[in-house]
Amino acid sequence: MNQNQKQEEIILSGKEVQQLMQCLPKATFVGSKIMKYQGFWYHDNHIQNVLAFQRHFQARDTDLIIASLPKTGTTWLKSLLFAVVNRAHYSTNHHQNPLLTNHPHELVYSLETDVYSKAFVYPHPHHLNELSSPRLLSTHLPYASLPESIKNSGCRILYITRNPLDTLVSLYYFSMKVMKKYFSMDVMKMILGMFYPTPSMEDFFEAFCEDRIPFGPFFDHVVGYWKESLEQPDKVLFLKYEELKDDPTIQLKRLAEFVGMPFTSQEESEGVIQQIIDMCSIKKMKELEVNKTGVINKLFEKKTYFRKGEVGDWTHHFTAPMVEKMKKLMEEKLEGTDLSYKLLS
Ligand code: A3P
Image 1 (tube, helix red, strand yellow):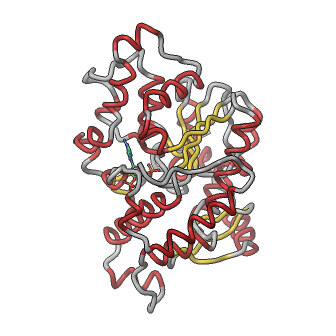
Image 2 (spheres, protein in one colour; image 1 turned 180 degrees about the vertical axis):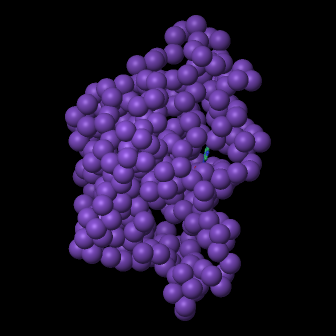
Image 3 (cartoon, rainbow, N blue to C red; image 1 turned 120 degrees about the vertical axis):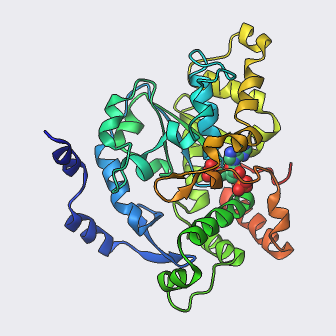
């Protein structure tokens, strides 16, 4: 079977996708089209990828899959996971450590946005078979929509979440950078609709509060993984961005134990944990040449994945009534879950 035939197997028929898309509820997220599939919103050009991922992905028992909503610390967790899993092969100061010469997204592939994307740039689905175990992969899909083979195999999921206010600020800056880089404002206006104004932070806030963000509703996504982590603690590890910032050593130990590679007392006394934390710090990641230029997925500049990396940046962006509204929403949506967020460092 040649490469084209293999790819055709994965691409779903355009007609099938179109038929499904016609039936899905539609809305806009700061001007771009989104569709609701299985209770969650996706950009319209993602629907096909999601379907291909759901239908074709075959998990291995050894797979380690990072799950998250966008802008909650995915890139950081990718670098930490890679460093922990590969520490026997590459010490943190070894010049051949791939984290020094690759963006974290090039080491841990995003399933629906990279692997099963229509564009079929590297990596495509067949590269998955070539990866050695444990494969490190990632997804933004909610738990309920994950392919059955992820749910039913022995593979493990590492979920990261972040307080919604900082997530929103991060999403705003990321989205604005992407829009500004690729479209002049005139073209952008044409794409968004002639009279649609440049999106503001208020627009993002409103979309969030109306449960209209890509891969959201936010709280449904989080609570779905939270419940699984309580019911299946060996299957789903639940991490919070704020706790990683507060005490990275404890969280890194949790992570290493979860993936079955706990730090030995010798490693601890040699400072291996601290070395990993330092290597994966945002300061260090930003300084690396590989993270300063170039793009991921033909669209996203590598450097836009590293901005401030702080807890509490939201204090500079929202009015008191907006913060109140978000706090109320959090209370309401998380009631009875025993889950909460720290908003300040
Ligand atoms: P800010 O925009 O608030 O700075 P994601 O990786 O899920 O897209 O999330 C991006 C957010 O994580 C950005 O937040 C980014 O700066 C932050 N981030 C990236 N790498 C980080 C690191 N090594 N340490 C802490 N935060 C990091």
